[in-house]
Structure formats: C-alpha cells, structure tokens
Amino acid sequence: MIPTGKFQHCFHHKPGQERMVDSEMLKKRLFSLFSLLLCASLTAGLAGCASGPAASSSEESAATPASSAASSAAPSQQEADPSALPLVTEPTTLTYFHYLDGKVSASMSSHDEIGCYQEMEKRTGVHIEWLHPPVGQETEQFNLMIASQDLPDMIFWNKWKNVAGGVYGMIENEIILPLNELAEKNAPDYLEVIGRNDTISRQARLDDGTIFCFMQIDSEGHRANAGGIQLREDWLEKLNLSIPNNIDEFEQVLTAFKTQDPNGNGQADELPWAGTIAELRNLTSVYGVYYGMTVQDGKVVYGPATPAYKDYLARMSSWYAQGLIDPEYVVTDDTSKKAKVTGDLAGAYWGILSADLGTYMQAKADDPSFKLNGIPYLESADGSGKRYVKLRDYCGGSGTAVTTACKDPELATRWLNYAYSEEGHMLMVFGIEGESYEMVNDFPTMTETIMHNPDGLAFAQALARYACGSMSGAFEKDQRHFEQAISAVPEQIECLHRWQEGNVSTDIFLPPITMTADESSTYASIMTEVTAYADEMHDKFIMGKEPLDNFDSYVEAIGRLGIDQAIAAQQAAYDRYMQA
Image (cartoon, rainbow, N blue to C red):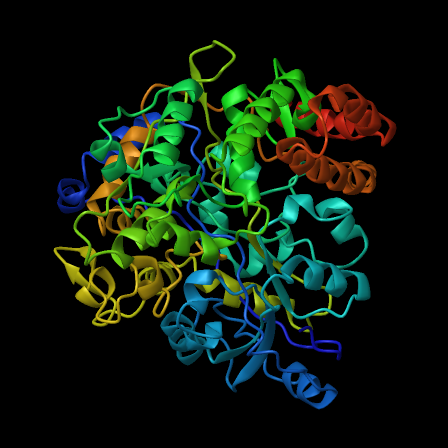
C-alpha cells in the first residue's frame, strides 16, 4: 500500500547505453539465431517477453514525517564527478514505487532481496525503500497515488504513454519532472544510449524532445522475443497432426485435442485452448485488427468496432460453443494457466518464450513425454498472406520518472544513471560475478545456479534472485543475456525460429505515439467507457449471451460514446510520429 505521508526522498540512476558487443570471441559464441534476428527485427512484429505486473504487499512500510525529514537532510551528490562512488557521504534513503515482477515473487517478497540492488546500495550509499503495490492492485494504487499527489521520489511504470492526461499532463500538473537539464548534468551514460540512433532517440522522448523518464531499452533479441501460440507438440505427434498454418487448420488441431483424448486418461477433460482473456484477444490479429486502436492503410481505427472483429467474434463464439475454449477463460490468471498446462489439461495457449514455455518445460523436466513448442503465426484471414504480430519497441513506455516530491532530483538522476554505466549494467543484467555469472573468454556466462537451479526455479526466476535481466526495469537489456535465456530450454530456440517464419508484418500496430495533454484527456475520458463496454460485450458475444446479430447495435453504441473523437486524438499523434 502507498504510505500516507508525503515522501521526501529521491534516488539517482545513471543513463543507459546499449552494449554493442563487437569482440570476435563473443561473435563466435552467439547462436546463428541472432544473425536472423538482426536481419528480421525490423520486419518481424514480435512481442516481448516481459511478464505483466505481479506485486507483493509484504513490504508495505509507511514513511513517517520523521523518516522523510531525515532523508531530505542527507548529503547530496559529489559535485566534481556525478559518477563518483559512493554517490553520498552518508547513507541516504530514497523511496521508489515499483510493482513486483512475478519472477521475483516466486521466491522473494521485495526488491530488497535481489542481489543487484543489495550490491548497488553498498556501492552508491543509497538505500531504497521499495513501495510494492499489492498483487492485482498495481493500476489502482498507481492512479490513487497520482490523484492524491502523495508521491515517492521515483516511480517505475510500464504504461507511461497511457496514463490519464498523458505524460505532458503529468509534467504540466507537476507530478513528474522534465529531465533534460538534470540528465545533461548528471546522466551522461543514459544520454549516450538514447542518442545511439534516431529511432531510440525519438522513442525515448516526447514529441517536443522532452526526456520524462529513464526508459527500459530493449536489445534486438528482446525486441524479437515474441509471444505467440504454443501447444503440446507431443499431442500433435501422438495424433499424427501437422503444424497448423492458418486459422482453419488450427481449429482442426483444437478439435482433435478435444475429441481424441491426447492426454490418455480416458476422460474428455482436455482444454484445447487455455489462457487469459487478454491472450485470447491476441487472436484478433489473425483477422487483421488489434484489440484496441489499430492502423489500416495509414488510418487509425478502433479494432473492436470493425467488420474484421466481428469475424473474430464469430469464430471464437463457435469455438466456445464446441468446448474448444476453456470455459473458465474469464477468470484464468497466470497461476491457474500454469496449473492447466503442467497438469496435462491445456492443449494450446498464447505464451512467451521464457516465462511460459521455458518455465513449463522446466517444471515438467521429470516427464520426458511432455513437450511444448510454438507454431508460426497464423496467416491472416484477410487473404494478404501476412502474419500480423507486434514487435517490441526499443523504448516501449516502461521506465522510471523522478517526481516533483523529490527533494534532491540531482541525486535521483545520478542513482538512476548508474544502471546504464558499464559497471551498473553488468550488475543489473547479470547480477553478482562469481554467483550468478562468471566471465569466460570475455563473455558473461550464467552459472549452474541460474541455468540448472538446484531449487527447481526456471531460468528467469533463478536470475531474479540476483539481477533484473529477465524483468522490466529502468536499465538496458543485453543480447548476451537473451542468448542464454532462450538456451535454457532447447524448444525455446526452435519456437523463436518458428515465430520468424513467413511474411511477418507489423502493419496493423501503432508505433509508440505520444498524445498532448488535451488529446490524452479527451482520449482517456472517452476510452474508459468504450473499453469497459467493449470488454463486457467481447465475452457476451463469445459466450452466446449476446447474439452476433446485435453487432451493428454494439458498434452504434460505441459511436455514441465518442469513439470518433478518441480516434482523432490518436490519428493526430500518429501523424506527428510519422512526420518526425
């Protein structure tokens, strides 16, 4: 929970720079996969691997006025060299709102327990008071914090481009600080990173050039580390089925999973398609639309109000009636999904490489008959031959902002900058040398503790005890981490290859646009109601509670809610982005 007292602490972070690995030794070690990734990444629209917010309430400590005053009185940065360690001459506490990643909560209750942050405190002299919102209440707590302006020193958020009022509004309403001048003085590493090429530079700033946070910056591999359809390949083999290429062939596979008892227990208990509501909605891309604002021939449209979306609903409604979709999909979360997959019930689902496929395979390591793999993105039903999928942006909107409540913003930016320095980068991504990794021929090689964890933790979960390389955060991802993350389970590499197959396209997805404060305000006020209504009707149509004959009435209702104004706001921002 958010402490009731106004926070008076701030913390510092160094600017990030992407590591351009150019040694011959490293080149020899990189899988042949990466040559494919580097060539395909501009066209392969693959989503990233980071998992959604998961939080813990066990570290909900309240900041008292006394503790705030003590922190604000702590010494500031050393003026001569903003990068000199330690950053302060006396221990200093900074407050940091940050959701707790599910890979951390698998074995810990706070970022305090992660090795890299413990070591960072020793090096910088800065102690972080972590404010982790309770599980499932991340957005609610974020909005409450912003509305009350009861702010910590720093806020990490993974949806900055979607905040109410937009980022410009957050600055104009004095919630977060513009960081250009602070970065120029205190964050040379971060400026070097975001200045590496025009694409990163544009994505790390607002339209007017404002730097508003220290962004998570993804490597080529992490950008292409997509989510997609995964299934029980051993079931395919058992039933003599071919890998499906389009939605009709995929339906045939699901039907076989439903009717031919692939788990061999003599019961009709298989769940051909399992997973969450959000994962089911990813299948809208098979029909050439996105569940949200989408692009068609350079024009922004609202996907859930298009004829193509009606075709998607018709197919999903048919699947639900046939029992091809898990009847509990509306209440399924990551935990119950894992139980169904590893419990030999789920046949197919939408998943990502490490957090899903890798985790499930490692959980079933003692069952040699259990095998998961991905299938190529299904060809679009629009007849274009394209396979639509979203590629992660270099800077997708995740990052850490410094708030106006921070009493020492210069220290905050210096602390943040450290994670982007060479030393800080290695600590954040790979953890503790000699424990989580060893340098072998100039290559940071994960130890057996990470690759084959004695406690049975998957790669990402084991690394989370030492470093943030497999998580979201204000730092730069590393290609060398990606290589090892996907090698933990051989099927992950094959899965990624399959997701690269065919005419992969990002055409229907918006780039990381930024709306003005007025546009954001208009958009948010309209889309709150539109999204709630579309979400409700999505499940009613699929479950047969609302006949599809009423689809036109549904579209008219969305029109009355003001969707055209929301589209206009997005179109204006899209046009600015494309003309920049």
